[in-house]
Image (cartoon, rainbow, N blue to C red; front, side, top):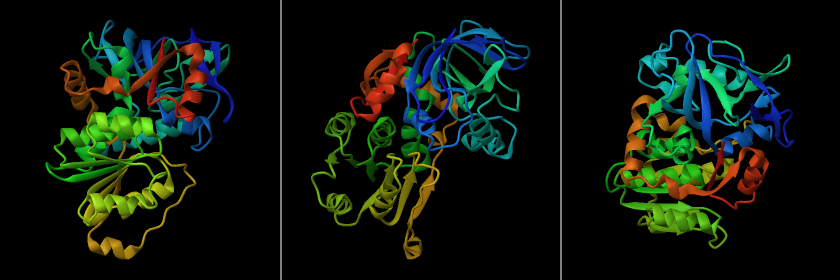
Length: 366
């Protein structure tokens, strides 16, 4: 099979022929149909987050179950599934508390880039085994993953749209509905309206926000934010102080909720500055691991809170099928996020288009 492999940070991905082992206990093999091109991949590819190499990247995968290993009970061959960036073991304290995106095993999977529970790797080129980003490695024709790393969805859902629910869309929607718990009538400002931020706009609209503000430097992203439900847009290139503009648009007080989806330390500080006393700031963007921010401690005595989110604090087995159903019913236009599709051989072009801000989101069709 073909797969996109990163041999070292800041180098192009190489499309190579590799072999894949059959699934072992509690594992499944997926014939991939489409994979979202997510900025999270790029953060690892650029070395902003540590990653073992060589590695098959990609994590927003959707496809058909080809084979199942011993003990698999949740899916069977022929089922359509979406792979989840945040693995949940189902047995640790966080999973038991109903907070599966904080699963203790997830950090191991992310940092080790192999299958959960230290089960190793399944992709290799001769004797050289390849790591799998998030235990997935979806920029490939096939992948072998743990059964708990996927969610079964309806088979007629278009793979090249619903693959985005594997990370970016669920992160943005969940940041608004689950983490921030936006209430009807509240004001929400979203900083950075790429795939995650635009999804946060949709999530705020779903939650009944009364005033949605989008902040970004790209006019085409701001235009889409308006189309998806933003009431006001702010381009920092055109205003001296976006924070002051947010306060002006919220009656001088500041927003009830700010969602940071840019992955930039200084933007996190702007987001926090944009909420009123007692407001909530949610950090959904992935800033480089070495980045730091600073806040005046006194502001916390004014009731302000800042909180991170992992994949929108979703419960994937419940939330993802619901979101697929909403999309299929015409109630959640996530297809509008997709600007362009690429083939697997064009994966480097897809990331170049992302960096050049030529696309909102793009998809690799396998």
